[in-house]
Amino acid sequence: MTMTPRVLAGLWLALAVAGGCLAKPALVPQIFSIDAPAAEGTRRSAGGYVLSVKKVQVSPPFDGRELLYRTGEHRLERDPYASFAAPPADMLTAAVRGYLRNAGFARDVVEPGGELRADLLVEVHATEIAGDLRRADDAAAVLRLRFLVLARGADRDRGPPLFEKEYSSRTRVERRTADAIATAWNVGLSEVMKAFVGELEAVLARAPPPATASARR
Image 1 (cartoon, rainbow, N blue to C red):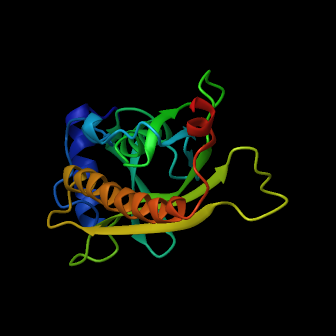
Image 2 (image 1 turned 180 degrees about the horizontal axis):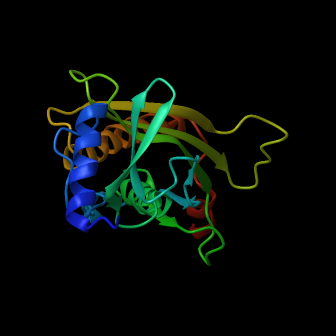
């Protein structure tokens, strides 16, 4: 028997409710984004650091376009009706660069291999980006990002990095919907980046001045 789209949608709805997934699964495709903050050009530091931010690495199985939910201790389910507008690695990369451009210590943020010489190399590894739906009364959006910051010319095999830390955000949602989870991921990323920028700024305050600033004098 050939199933029509309406029958398939009804079947998915029944399975989702029975399995304790989303409260109201969408019956039409939805597309979501992870966004960079609005630019704050007034905070740009003329004598600050030039940061080179590599493309964010996203651990499988969290690197797909479809939204992913934890529905059991060792069970993950993809949402066939909700997806990212672009691969999560691309959106996270653009967002991280946007947050760093607004940092008070940043003169500029560039891609690796660009013409402008960087003072710091920033690597980011997203170890988890998922909706936690294991408990009906405690749904949340989970985001884990690990940051590694190296000074220009540093060799990670010969000494510790300038900064290294993993941040974890678990933002609770009132509604068990893809829209609520996607919104919570953006909130969580904002909190993670605020913490990362603040801690990195404290480290840089104790470090030598940026080489690019010295070269201009």
